[in-house]
Length: 417
Image (cartoon, rainbow, N blue to C red; front, top):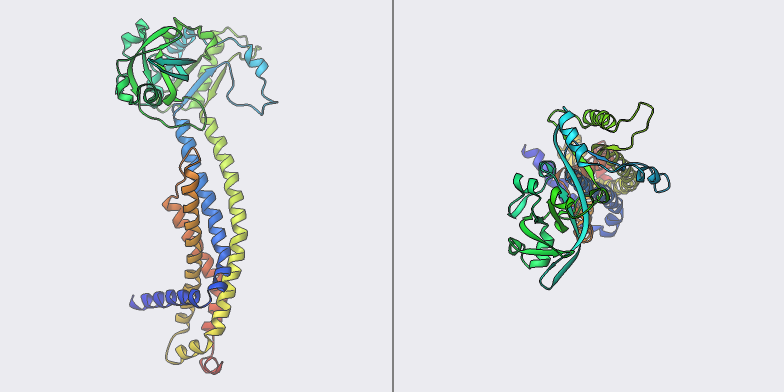
């Protein structure tokens, strides 16, 4: 054990000495390693952070949830999307939701959703662009949000359609200064009054659109329908599967229920779409896989260049230390010890170059996190991967020079000047 530690320490000192004595040569040789690690870790950290953010945004749509809408959420580009076909379809009805509740065996929670954009007023404060969501009882069982202050709707609130609202954190902060001050206050819109009974916990921005709870006001469907026309308010039905039921199975069942409900013959095309949010996860993972492959390809070229640079350093180092190698072998050093020392020195040089690359990625992540809608973090697994690449690359780059050093004849090596 002591011998191993001695070899490690000697190799580390040699690597540092190489950096000290030949700064420019070593820097230029390690630059390829630094750029390669920077590319790999930069791409992996960004993609990993972006995936985490998008998966979090997707989960806000509800796990294992189907959205029944007249619009399809998939489709091609702008020129390929047949909006003219979807716009002619009939809107979703709350009565259809009630029928699905009775006929579906695979659904656990079902909610109806409508929305409208309004401007809220409180005393002298006016806030525009607030999303008003009209929802039914099961909405909060499907959606992931918490109430920071006050309360959510009771069953009696849904039945009576009372003028109560649960508002977003930013709405409360901008209208009332402090969110908790909004409780019990009356806000106005379109000449109507709405009592605030709850404030939603701050959610943050979403990259996928969808529900912007921070700038929203949730009301009961019965209250919403008493003021606005639901057919003109982007209505859709949210259906969440029971535990153990796949979204695909639920989607198939809902297609059958909706076709029966709308009395469509076998030859007639669907006039609705059962959108499965889970399919977007597969599409996103496929895109990220392609980006990762591109990042690895770019980084791979830099790492190859860096490996040649490190190999060049090690060849020069072996030549410069030929007499020292001969002296070590003459006093009893084994060939394996010489081999390990040079391999470890090569690995340490690559690790130093990799650490510089990691530092540059960390600086870049700090800067980008302030301008991007998500924070870039470097996971421990990515750091371990980077160091592993450096060690493997160092061993590969140093194997030939180290082998040459270990096979030297001590007498000939000592005579070398």
